[in-house]
Amino acid sequence: EAGVAQSPRYKIIEKRQSVAFWCNPISGHATLYWYQQILGQGPKLLIQFQNNGVVDDSQLPKDRFSAERLKGVDSTLKIQPAKLEDSAVYLCASLGGGLAGGTSQYFGPGTRLLVL
Amino acid sequence: RKEVEQDPGPFNVPEGATVAFNCTYSNSASQSFFWYRQDCRKEPKLLMSVYSSGNEDGRFTAQLNRASQYISLLIRDSKLSDSATYLCVVSNQGGKLIFGQGTELSVKP
Image 1 (cartoon, rainbow over the protein chains, first blue to last red):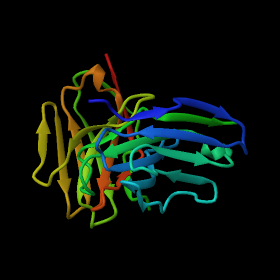
Image 2 (cartoon, each protein chain N blue to C red):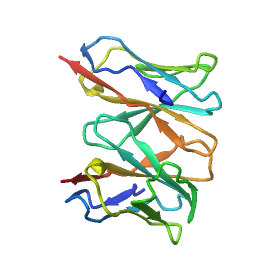
Image 3 (cartoon, one colour):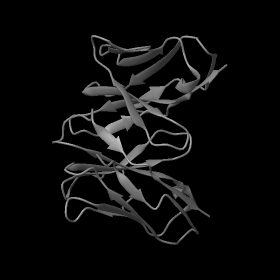
């Protein structure tokens, strides 16, 4: 079974530029998550989708971050404009079934973003 | 106060040592509890779920005390390959995972 795919794996941009990340979850997984992991910290949830609807985006900085999952499969996360403090690893994860607690939440390899 | 707090670490132990990780959580309505392992520059992977009755998987034992809102992970006979960051994770009903900051373990020969 293919895992969660993410691209790009690495990205270096200058502050105030825009960047987009892509995630393809495990086939059939209805729930998709985007996390931000700053060096030395645990992952922090940015947004949770159930199919193509947003379940929780309470910690998404909506003035600069946006995410979509239009067809309920792939998802993109965008930052516009980027700030230095956005340097982090952006992890995508997916969960099969409904909104049950995540014993089977699988993470992708992440996108490492460096903002200069 | 952070929702999930862990020992700050890092833990540096010799091979064969027993090491214990502690974690507390603030939301008494939390429903599911886990330990994840994260290797350097890799994604987190589920190590084990944690139940009130306690559960064991080989050298790993996890415990949950709901009254104290406390979770633990014990690793016996530690191996070099156990070196990683261990993340305490709590989940609510909607499947949202809340991670602690992680505790780094380094097992030395």
